[in-house]
Image (tube, rainbow, N blue to C red; front, side, top):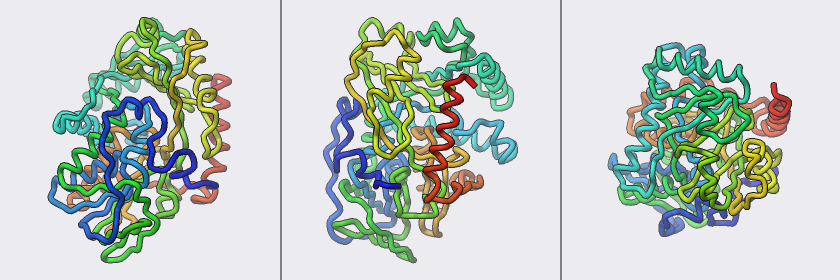
Length: 435
């Protein structure tokens, strides 16, 4: 990696110039770590995983210090599409083959719990966040439509999930005002939200519960042992347990995680308010995503802007964001040609080779969860709860997530990026020619 992703594309200690940052409910900055302190648990990273862990640990009565290099919610947690999806990142057919039917059922129930945890946290802590139900899955080919509908029937038959409505060509066009899709489904049990406000709500709740949150506190070193010492430029935390929750921004802090978790960038734009035209884009207040390998995802904001994510880029520095994202946006919605783009931003998420999150005990007193592969709003929030339980010797959920073999990228951290570029080039070419 040529650049430290914590500093490659952003100004120190500032949120990106995104629609979310422009419309967030303000939260006063937390002080940088200064001097030496102690804690039961030190958490590295202030996104959904770390903030959820801090909240759940503090509620259990443990002393917690969380260290965030920039601002809480600075990374993918404050920049993503806001979709709270159903299931794990891999589908139940894959999980049944890899983990067996009994464990596949446990994975399904954990994912259902994850969605409910998000909704419960919003309500319990009176967060300035509205959860809007509904995600449309839009298919480009008739074959994809058939496969999606068959999978929906399986979820209903084998897992009792009755929130999926199959959509034919007319049905999807009635919701998604685009001519390109052949059908799909709407998942009424999934939903979407303002991702940065949710992160800020978690931070406020964690601080209220007693967790000590520090921003502008980049971790530069961890000395491991019975009492790990976590060091920043201006202080140190001596603790009993460390939780690594930096996801795509972990860098070189833990090579064994880095070999299995790949940071990649993704990009979004927000149009000008569309006014009455918004109903021609989405006729219901649902989010949407499609079946491209380089996935397109979108929803309307509360002031009727189109928030659209997509596009591809093969470098760690951000490209021309407007050009990169408007190309797929206009492929889906050609009627928006000439629309003004008011905000454009990028961010770093993380993927794994098998697209399932990487849960691992790096050492007996060092736990890590990351690599949500674009499915992180619900699963990262769940991960924080599972990490808190594991620290408290209630590790059934964490151990289940860690039970799936998580392969290293070929060549480890050194070669994972050039190999990903080759794979992304191949699959995006398949997208373009309609495979």
